Every structure is written in structure tokens, then in C-alpha cells.
Amino acid sequence: MKFSKMSVLTALFAVCFVLSGSLALAGAPSLDAWKPAFDPSTAKYKCVVSNVSTPGLKGVYAGFAIRDELWKRTNGQIYIDFKPFSMLGGEVEVLNQLQMGAIQGMGVSSVASTNLGPRFGLVNLPFLVDSFEKLDKFVANKKLFDHFMMAMDHQGIVGLDITGYGNYGWASKTPVRTIADAKKVKFRIAEAEVNQILYKEWGFNPVVMPWPDVPMALKQGVIDGLDHAPAVCNLTKKFEDAKFFTQINYAQGLFIWIFNKAWFNSLPADLQKTFRAVVSEVCASTRKATVQQEADEINKATAAGVMFFKLSDADMATLRKQGDVAHKKYADEINKIYPGDTYKTKNFLKEVEDYLGYKP
Image 1 (tube, rainbow, N blue to C red):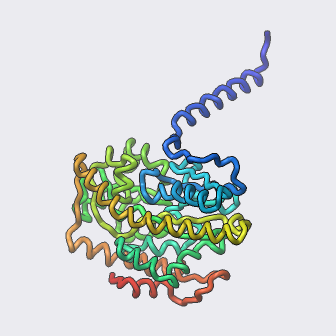
Image 2: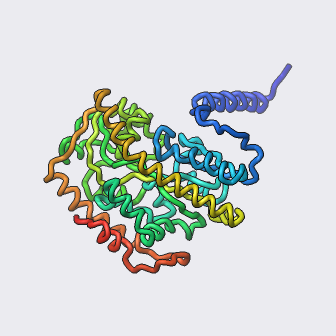
Image 3: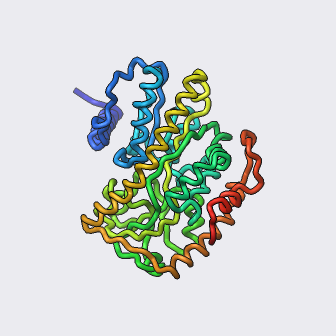
């Protein structure tokens, strides 16, 4: 039997495609441990929600908690199909899917959120919302927090509430005890303008990289450190390669729970109200749990041999002074007013700085 060259090439391509697909599926994380205790096929409304990280984090597990509580409170009318572990891709591409309506929701990290909502960059600015206490204080101010949550409204995306993943610092393969040490490290930072401005002002050597690419980059030496929170580093096993952590605590990492506005508004008014209430309640309880989780994960990492450091007061003062430049350079983006905003403040950043007692 004779085969044309095209037939052979087509067959080879098909085999390669099947094999690559099988390998991808084999390596994909399983959600079996978080299966719903109900049959979601009867739901009237389905909402696919993405997240980049592991449900081992309280701030991520909130997606499953919202799913279960919403199912109960709507009598099975709404099903949240929650996809953590970057199952739908990196955050920038998933944000585009959300805006187009290909998916309905996302627990987006605060660092990636600025790609469609620059105002969200407020929480990435150094030493502003830099503790669990300040985060609670910010959330409690309805006027300021509601304006913050409107950051993507002009993009057709509604923000409902936040969970967290702890205090940002530096995980590294070599000890970082000083600013001079930090300047020798290739830190991975998120695909966010605020972070890029900040690391430039600090005079460091950042590598901008999507989160799904970090494990391999860390193992291969493309990076030898990363800007992140200790709980994330421990639960996602980054400490297996980077066994040192410098506690800068310059910002709180958040997951901002956002949804496609057209989809959300298509829900009946009573379901919209219930949806908002459930997200708010779950997020509030999750933020409290995150405080304890960070302490627990630091203790576990320490017991496993990870070493934790803090910079000197002089070095911290330098980071604060240099970091203030990021506040000034990004202020216009944070202060920009969009048509849907009801709070027409002229200097939102200054209001938040004064309210939280920020001092460079």
C-alpha cells in the first residue's frame, strides 16, 4: 500500500498531538479532593472561575467555599466551576478570557490585576497596605474600599471582594541579608507595571515572568529568587529550590474576586444580591484564616530547614525612601476617574495614604 507524503505527515502530526495532549492531561493537577457534594448538572447558571494558585492557600480555597455556599443559598441555581492551579493558563491571558466572556470569573492576584485595573495597583505600592491590620482597616472603610473595587468596571468587569495570601518578601537560593545581597539575585516578579517600577527604583535585577513558568525557571537557574509570600512559597514547594526567605513585608498579596459584568448583570436581581452576600461573607472569614495560615506555614518551613532573615533598619529605610518613587510615578493611574465611578475623588492615593498613616 502506498502513502503520500502529505498522508504520512498528517498521521505523524495526529500522533504527536494525541501524545502531547495525553502528557498534558497526565501532568494536570487533580481536583478530586475538592469535588462538590452535589450534582452540578442541574444548575440553571454556570460560572467558570479561574485562579493561578493552589487551594492549599486559604485565599484560593475560598473559590470552593463560595461554590458550596452559593449552591446552598440559591437552592442549586448557580454552580461555580472553580479552576485553580493555573488550569486555564497564566493570569494575563485569563484576564482577557474573562473580559471577552469566555469565562465568567477569576480570583486574580493583586499584582496581575493592574493589567486591566490600574487602580488595583494601590495595594502593590510598597509600605502602604503592608500588614494584615492595615488591610482590615482599608476594607472597613466602605467609601475607599468600594472605589478601589471599581477598578475594572470600565473594562466590563465587576469586583466583589478580596482574600489574601500574606506578606510579600524574597525567597532566594542564597541568603539575602542586605540590599547588596539582593542586588545579586535574579528575582522573578509578576507581569505588573507597579512591580517593575518598584524593582527599578530599588536597583534590583527582576525577571518578569508568568507564575506557571516559575517552577521550571527556578530549577533551571533562569531565576534564583522570587518576590512572593512565605505561605505561597511553602505550599507550592518553591522552598525546595529557594531555601532562604527575607521578610520585607512591603505589601499584602491579594486575590481579587472579579466577574464578567454582562454575565453578572444577566442574573435575576435576587440572585445577584445573594451572590454578592456569599462572596463577601466567605472572603471576610477567609481573610481571618489567612493570618494564622501565614504563621503556620512559616513555622513549617522553618522546621523543614528554611532560613528566614530580616534586613537592618537602615536597609529598610532605604527601601522605603526609594519605594516612595513608585507611589509618585503610579499615582496618576490610581487616581484616574472612569465614567462608572460614583466617588469622584481628586486624589484617591493621598486619601488612602493619609488614612493608613503612610510615611516614606
